[in-house]
Length: 282
Picture 1 (cartoon, rainbow, N blue to C red):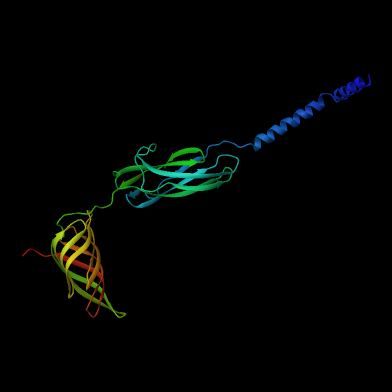
Picture 2 (cartoon, helix red, strand yellow):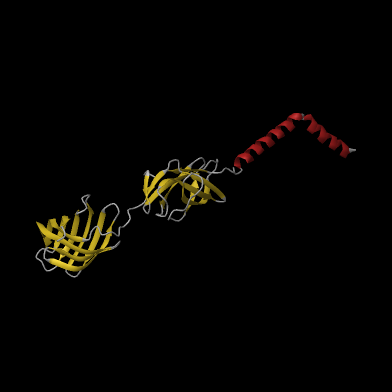
């Protein structure tokens, strides 16, 4: 009987507290559930933005870069290994080839609602046709793959191509104007400059070439490009030089810069500008 009285007392005591005890406990349970929900990881997919190339005109074969911004949309810090692959696209959705640059992998730690920007170099290959392209970025964040396109397109142009014509075959004569050096002494000077070119290919000129009294029968390596630019180098025991210039629209005059050395002369170093003109055939 005493045991039963005790049990009733316990029940009575519980009941004497009324429903307020239950309400307080229920309130505590609700608060506890809310706290756990706030601490639980939030499975939010990061956002990716691609800033367009700084230049609206991109030369194939030249290194350019895009900036890829990864935004953490969750309320917690995101620390993941991120792999970014860039590719060209004509529609801003699917890749139409690949860039001549590898993917870039970084380990990023981005605060809640923060972002991180990664500059990624790319080289458009010369195998792509000229035209308008957008860069598409494929971003692997942990197990999540996200694709985003640059908001602006760029115009792809191809580099000048070497010519295999006979534009530079013939007899040229002119002057180098600039300075000569010897043993630290510098003086303004002029020197005669002549070519007697007998062969032209995509990578060299053959013939007889002279600067002042220095003369070589041999080959200049270099190119004439389809934009009329030229760059050639001559290397021999007593005459060495490098020239950069262009064939003028008249088709017979070449102008540019000259830097070289002529052995067995008082002033061996020669640097300046040159102008040579193709002479009429005899």
